[in-house]
Length: 263
Image (cartoon, rainbow, N blue to C red; front, side):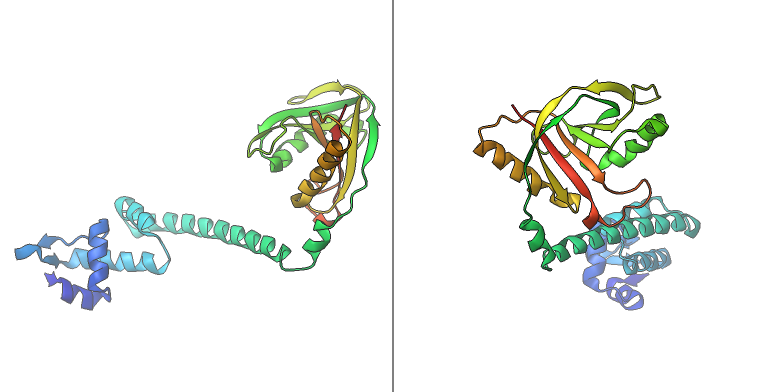
């Protein structure tokens, strides 16, 4: 048996760390002597080697607990290592996305976006046949559904796709209707075919990333207030040029028309 000081020496774990791991339940001594002195044996030494292995791979205390409570051998360990790899890759992607967002504010480009001048137009949108899917989801979920719509539409598409938004405010999960204009009403699995009514709307063309669409909405809402116009739902985002079915392309070249019905 090893006293805590001796065990610290052979494992290269500080006494403070050993006490902490004991408190956390991931490396408890096999025995306690007089005055509750911690005593460690060979099995504890093997477990300490595993704890050190996991610590060096940046596993958290919670993750170590989970593994040590369920992992029986090194063959099982490979599954946990693979999961950690996947989680790490996901975290790296999230960090890269954060860096990209930070870079937007470190270069003059963002100033150009913030000073974008929109031309407001009053337009009449004629009744239009559409194939559509209405769903509760996030703003970026359109990619999950657009393939289904175009599969049903085939060669009967007759214009740029657009989303109808049935909520006035921003929500994490909102009411969205993805629409593809069609030459005639069609039938298809998983889609609805109908005619949208004529609307009068104020519109603005946004050039660039969807991240900055709020600037176009602000311009339109300010215009409506200044001209005593009452805004109605649903608003439309018409994607004249956007990402493809597979590749996103250059978001700076996206062309989106925002249309807010008014009366």
